[in-house]
Each structure stands twice: as C-alpha cells, then as structure tokens.
Image 1 (tube, rainbow, N blue to C red):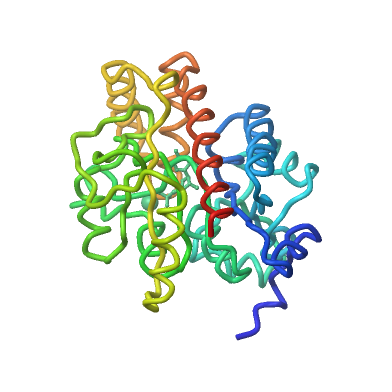
Image 2 (image 1 turned 120 degrees about the horizontal axis):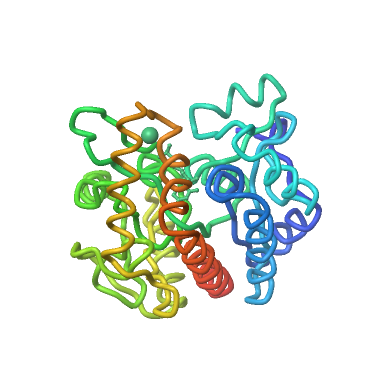
Length: 303
Ligand code: PSU
Ligand code: MN
C-alpha cells in the first residue's frame, strides 16, 4: 500500500523513524475540541516537551491541507488551538473526505491511531478515549475509537474513561473486540478525573518495560489491533468523586435537554463540566495528560 501521497511527516519525525528512535503520537482533537484556548496550546506544547524529556520524539497529528500530518510546528498547534471548534473534528470516517478536499481537521484517538500506524509509530498518549455513551442501548452512540483499538496496531495510553461514558459497557465492548486492556500500577479501571471506577481491568503492568514487552508480543503474534493502557491520575490532581460525578450528571442532563448529539456530545460535556467545576476539571485533565505522555515516552523508549 502506498500512503505517501497523503502522509506528511515533519523532518524531525521522519528522521526519528528512519533511525529507529522512540516516538510518541499525540492527538489534536484534545487541542481544538477538548480544552479552551490558550490552555489547549500551552498543554500541547508542554506535552511535546515532556515527551522529549523522557527520551521520545513527539509526533502531534492532524490533517492540514488534506495531508495526514505526523509532527506539527508550534504555529500549526497554535492555529488548531485558536480555531478550536471551527476545525473539523476528524475521526476515521472523515479522513478520505478531508484528504480529497484538501481540508484541515483535528484528529480524534481513532484518526490519530490511523496516522500513527501509517507512519510506523506504535505508542500514543492522550487524556481519555471515546467509548460507549450512557444510553447507547437506544442512541447507539459508540465511539469509533473502540473499533480502531481492535483494528489498528497502536498502544494508546489514557487515564481510563470518564463517567460521561458507560464504563461497564465500554469494558464489555473492548473485551468483545479482543483489545488488551492493561492497568498501569492498578487493578481497577481509573475514571479519568479519579483513580477509581469500581470496574476491574483484566491485566496489570507496573513498569514501562513490561508494557513494551506486551507490545512486542502482540506484534509477534500478528494481531491486527492495538492495546489500551489505563494510567490513573496522580493523587495530587485527582478530584473529589462526589464533586465531579455531580458535575457530570448535570452536564449530561443539560446535553439531553438541548438535544446535543453525535460528535458534538463529548466537546459539549467537557466544556460544561469545566464550567460546573470552576475550571478544576481542566486542571486535572491537563495533569493527567502530562502523566500519560511521560509513561508513553518511557514505554516507547523501552520498545
Ligand atoms: N475525551 C476527553 N477529551 C477529548 C476527547 C475525549 O477527555 O478531547 C476526544 C478525543 O479526541 C476522542 C474523541 O478520540 O473525543 C471521541 O469522540 P467521539 O466520542 O465523538 O468518538
Ligand atoms: Mn459518538
């Protein structure tokens, strides 16, 4: 397969791939749709710095001018942050259109995994993945991120899933699809803003080297898909469960009242939860992303 017509690597990422250096993919929907400006740009740039400090080259991904880009300039990151929700939130279904039309898009976990896999990048850090939404038994709102984890060979490091999702159904879906889910230093699925969800994870690893060994085994077995590492938010930044759960319930009720649907749902809920917690959910969100980037970089370095 020749992807090169659409794949565009930055010089730094290209050099890293050529010389087998550790690389970590980073997504861009979190910049444009997941956080407000200017914290989104500061966070994205700090992620790149943390990645380098831990021995890996950052490859922030996006679609720019119809090209699937791995490795962005600071100006390109600033552009995505300022444009915010004006940029297309791009998941798997959107890539052929954006490429054909020469458009821009900010990549979700699913779309970033596609670009990473094309470039040969095997580790990816983000905050939270999309999953099975609450009420999915009637709305069928299930993120394409889950299917991507089953199909595309990239290890995604996240902080578990937010209870804007149905965590139990999300875990069932991943089990059905055969996606390895690994708690990092925990036997419990973290709930993004907090360390505990009440749901257990099937496997646990306690060091980046262990994660690297699982990635190598999965490739050696010829599995088509990836894996999900769930890394709990550090104690210092984890939120009071009562406060955050109340905010989440209120945000979901508001979304239902307003009839928010489809791809608008997650960005709406994140912004609403931030307002309802006077910004403290954003502080936690930023810190858990840094924590995930650190682990992903150490894992890529161990690979
Ligand atoms: N969860 C977050 N922050 C985010 C997202 C999810 O805490 O920014 C974004 C990610 O890009 C994820 C996407 O891939 O939302 C999932 O959207 P959907 O449920 O529409 O697939
Ligand atoms: Mn959805």
